[in-house]
Amino acid sequence: AQSVTQLGSHVSVSEGALVLLRCNYSSSVPPYLFWYVQYPNQGLQLLLKYTTGATLVKGINGFEAEFKKSETSFHLTKPSAHMSDAAEYFCAVSDLYEGKLIFGQGTTLQVKP
Amino acid sequence: EAEVAQSPRYKITEKSQAVAFWCDPISGHATLYWYRQILGQGPELLVQFQDESVVDDSQLPKDRFSAERLKGVDSTLKIQPAELGDSAMYLCASSRSGGGSFDIQYFGAGTRLSVL
Image (tube, rainbow over all chains, first blue to last red; front, side, top):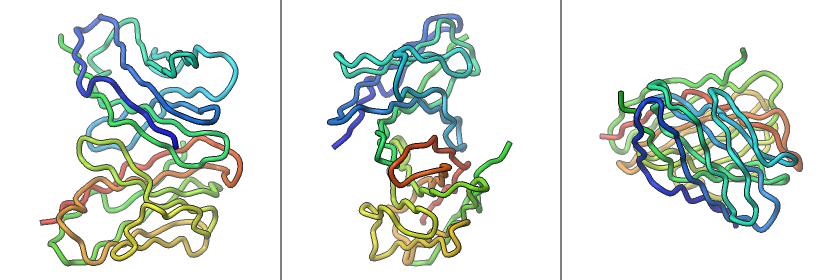
C-alpha cells in the first residue's frame, strides 16, 4: 500500500526566506509524486509532478521538488517566499496503474512580513 | 480554461437530513473522483468512476452514501441520513484518462458541508 508522510503540519518563514516543505512516501512500485496547493475554501491546484525522467522538477510560482529514491523523499522548495505563498500544501503519491491519489496530512505555510 | 464545476459551494444541514452534491467534470474527461477532506487532513478518495462505471468505492460508507454518474458525464454524491461526522469538504476531480493509464487530476472548488 502507498502512503505519504508530511513532516511538520505548520511551517512559518519570513518573506524572502527559503521555503522547505518535507514529504516522504512509501510505495512498492515506482511512484508518481505530486504537490498540490490549497487556498482557503478552494480546491486543490497542481504545483508540480514527478512521473519519470528528470528527478528535479519545476512547477508553477517558482516552486521545485526533487525525487530522491534512496531517501523516499520528494521535498518542495522555493528560494524566496512571497506573502501570496501562504496556503496549505499537500504531497500525494500514485502510480502508473492507480487512478487515485494518496495524500499526506498537509502542511500549512505561514509567511511573515 | 476549462474547470471542474461543483455545487453548492456551501451546505448546512441538520443531522438525519438528506444532502446531495453535484459535479460537472471538464469536458471529455473520462474519469471522475469524489474525495472527502476533513478539516486539517488531506483528501481521501470516496469513489472513482470510469465513464459511468464505478472503479473504486472501497472507502464509500455505503449504508448512507451513494454516488452515480448515469451518462458518464456529471455526477451526484448523496448522503442520507447525514451525521455530525460527515461535516467536511467534498471535492470532485476529473482526469482525461484512466483504467490502466495515469493522467493529471483537476479539482473543483469543493462543497463545504456542515451538519448541525
